[in-house]
Length: 412
Image 1 (cartoon, one colour):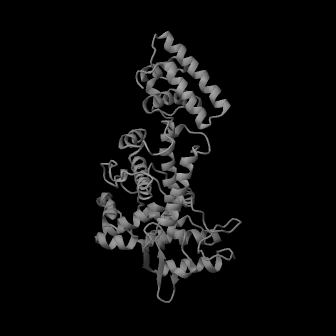
Image 2 (cartoon, rainbow, N blue to C red):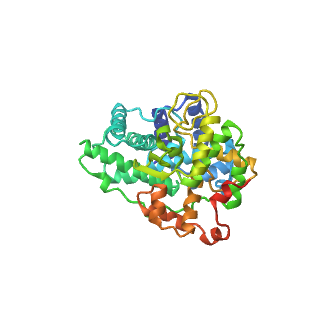
């Protein structure tokens, strides 16, 4: 691709955009910019495309110096920069990378569409993956099959480990977590293809492993003062406040995942035995935790005086019609952010969603020298290596402001 003339490169790029279903308006825009780029290359007496040619082009025509590429650009500047990045990506990978895709249906080849349908069925029926995992696997496998189509491949007969490695190179520039998740999805996809006899080589076992720790970031945690302010901002006299108080209390005191809180059912609360039973959404393992008195009374208060009168087995429901359980994609982050705003708690670069309350609970247990195996049991980790991420929290700083949840919860 490096020796290909700019004119030939742009011709092939145009055909690829047409295959991808780019609109007439988008094609008019790109063709206009490509003509300017060719004129600029001719003026510079360059036949082939190079990254430096693209950089000089946007600076000359649109006044965007290279130093500004990593800064926040306005929409028009971003669009102009996208033009040369698309050309560069196509030169390197012979594919329009997914960050540029605008069409609704990713796959257009009937064969790949059918494979995607079969993989979806495999994920749902055979593996019983969670809905979010299935959506991620289908999307990532779709990106790979679309990449194959861009290379002129209409099945997997010519797929090799070199093909896979070339696709992985298109992920360059994305975060470690994104690359890790993409490779994990592809590994599951190739296990399916090999198991179904669609391919004869077990590529899943040959794919590269990401050489980095699974958990590299320090979890977000709350200080005693922040948590007191957050809880103090909740109007526990209103129906919605009663619900939100119970939700946040469960996250703080029991460390449940957001999805597990949303999925709590009436039958999971064993009032006589004073325990809470549920099946974890992530591990599919049954979990039994003590039903602490403050949590029990908060849930009772909500059920008696706050919850809409709806025929649903879910404990927590939305308080706007229709009064349904929270959706799959609702991570209750806005719930936390709204109370942070009321409490005048500043937003940090680190995310402060529902999961941060779970992090805080685990970190406090660790600070109190609770064994990792016990913390794993409480927060539902199958492997203590997952729990070990909390060792990265600054325990010395935590020790200076230890969280006593009993004190925080009842702080008025």
